[in-house]
Amino acid sequence: MDSTANIPQTPATPEVPMAVSDQQNSALLDDTLTFLTASTPTNSGPQGLAEVERWQAVLASSERPGLAKIKQELNQLNELLTDSKTPAHDIAELLASLGAETAKVAEDAGGDYSSPLTNLSKLLIKAGNTLSK
Image (cartoon, rainbow, N blue to C red; front, side):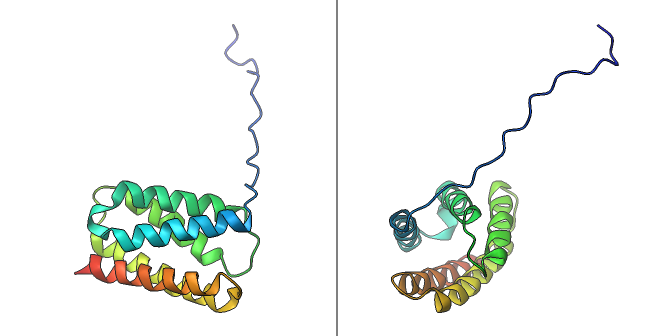
């Protein structure tokens, strides 16, 4: 075979945003609140990474304004959590920043999401503070 011949390429399958219902959003929020309430940041690596990945998938499909920084920080958190050599302080700073951004979203959320998002914000900041000690 000629090494300069074109090799047929399978076209990349475009990622289709996941449609997420309000009920699924609420369930994910409840799961995350339960996770953060029940565990300490120092022993929750694999489960924490799974929660981050779930949120990344859900937020990727959201077109709500004000989520860009949260999406970016979740991507950074995913990278930090996959590297076992990441200093705890780096993760703590990112958790605190995510908590602050979540508080901003909670202010605009209204309805049934405002209170759980405010609680999530507090728990993220608390986890960051615990991890930085």
